[in-house]
Image (cartoon, rainbow, N blue to C red):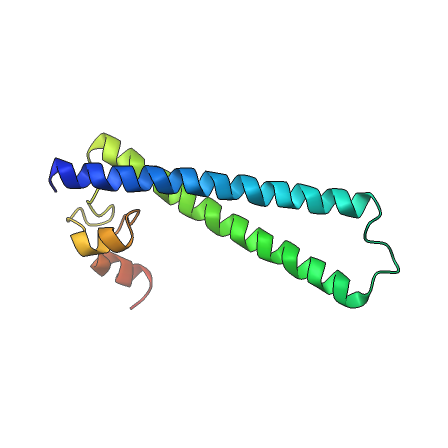
Length: 122
């Protein structure tokens, strides 16, 4: 892969890293605000069951978003590390080059499509 293309991937991955870090901070602030409202008594026993269900759903959604963002952020950081050590675009399993179209669709991919299919049991 040429240096210009790698630089483009690095730029996009760096921007994605910043976006994900911001998203995680926003989720954490939201969770902190929810926790404070619960401990301050805003959600009393008299609250309607639907309100309680909505709050539970929102907490579960936020936890899911948090887990997903952390997973993708870790993958983005690993991809940036691979760029720095010169192994970006190389399958971590078989050592073959990852198809450019796959990297354009999923810039933090670390497996070629063949190895990914094997991993998923296709």
